[in-house]
Length: 115
Image (tube, rainbow, N blue to C red):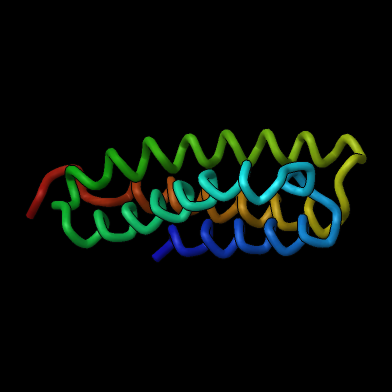
């Protein structure tokens, strides 16, 4: 369920960008469409894998993708601090970073061996 926070976070970025701020505003729908489709597919797949895989296997997938998400969100936060982005975009990236870090923490706490 924590992956849904990332999807909601990205939807918020889309809405913020629609109003002329953020990272996506500079792209055309043809350029960003495939990226959005891949992004939503990835997180839908991760949500499905959370239920389909044994905890010991899913743990490593969620740790790896979660850590990558933390790095990306941290990069966006630092870029937003440069003053080019709106306060709404910065706030959205900060809570997205917190949600991604929470996801990594939860994945780390999953038992290392199947019961």
